[in-house]
Image (tube, rainbow, N blue to C red; front, side, top):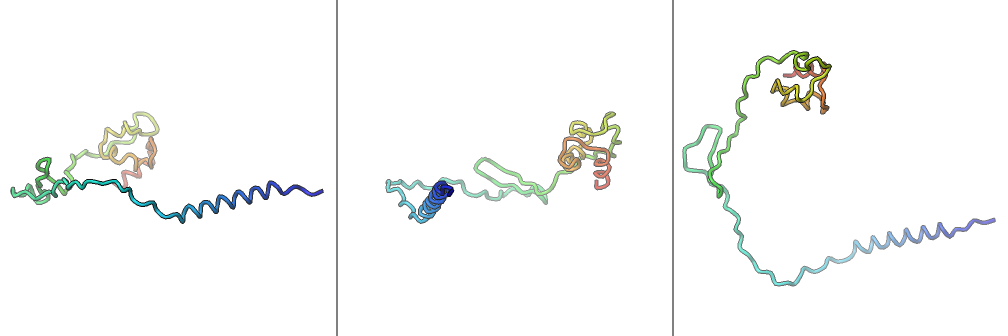
Length: 136
């Protein structure tokens, strides 16, 4: 007894039609731009900032005048406060076997680098803390 091939032919025909439709859609020319009359408005963009005639702020800073007012650009990283020696892991962990981001806030350099030190986790193990200390 032979099986009907009707479902297979239907599938092939519909697949061919979809493929042909996609090819035809890609070959259609772009529609022309709208023919509405458009009024040209002059650009009112602010002029680029100009360097101030005032004396330089410092060797790594410059002042500019902008439409919003004077802007000072500093090109150095501000000095950080000395946080002192790093605390012991047990002191940071407070009796736990890990340090949380809130615990790390007690030592700012660790708090600033917590995600890196903990490999993106929300807990820092003693081994991870010791590894972080070796590199800082």
